[in-house]
Image (cartoon, rainbow, N blue to C red; front, side):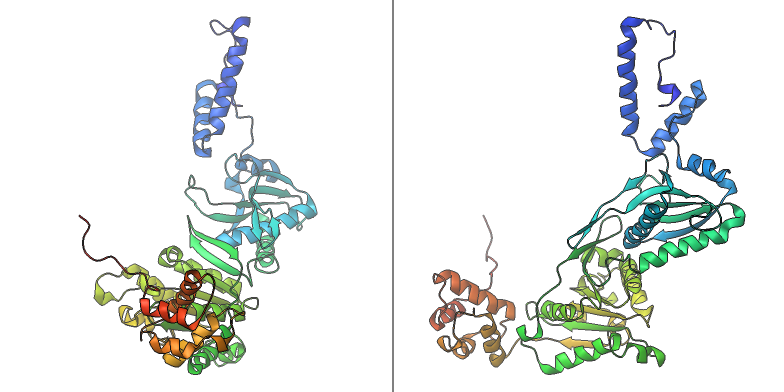
Length: 459
């Protein structure tokens, strides 16, 4: 520990009776310092050195560089790459491979923090990539010159907040450092990118967060939808899948956008999930929540470009991009959306968004090349209601035992697929698990399958 934290010898009262007390005080000071962030610890150490002299007993990242490369950091060169949240993990896995292969000496990644490893679960596998450390590779390990490879994570106490990959070398070896950086990033974007081809829930908490989740299992046969809508969806899928190379060769761009419009409950989200289920594996699927969509959309699409073929799902997009005419929209947010939809036209990215009302969206946001197809999904007609109702009947209920056509005839014109599911659920609950035509008709006629807001005022 720093010399300034010790009790000076010969201080008044420093006899045998007080030795244990002094030792306890020393431990207490060390514990207090350990709980402080690195900048606070460093400031106190420098203050102590100014007052009583002495050096800290632990090594900082700068001292680690100085010891191994035999020069102060000001006289070294550094190749630097900023890492995205996914890149921090995947680059960490690539660095871990180099550490396992060459067993370099490890040191602090930033300040005086000890080498740190993280933990991430992807599917049923557990990984522990390094998150904040420096590794010294001697000449001959990664190339002809010695190098310190450093990976650091986001830290609210640092001004360069964010995750970084750095390669420090002597000035004449800069090309070597650059080659090592590119080697690590190539592995990170290749077989170490464990998120590629997965279903990802994307949110925001001090930057993007990615959660690998089970993919949707809904299939086309589970939905009742007009064939012309499926045909339009398939055309857009072809652009980023089977026709991708041809579209880019012709310089037409393969990137596509689909906007699903219609009232709540008609199946917009279900359609998006069918597409996701069909493409998952060959494509990465990103389900973007409103926090990530409203503030970090540029980062979302930058990550999508790195993933390769990707489906980006933006539900209730009207929460993100109101029309400028409404006076409610955030113009900065709209500008970001327009920019990300215009960049990387050759990237195999399919955006599927949904809205309850297209008229609330800014006209610039819904033009061609941003959303190439706007598909309206309305309320089902009577024939479709009967078909949807039949899909919700359990396997042990024979279709002949329930007259779905008669039930559909009693349904209101604005009934939705979500409403019909609730009709079946309430009928099961109200009739001891039985489903009959009479039970379904009673539920439909009651109107209780839709929650109703209370009328009047509470006194």
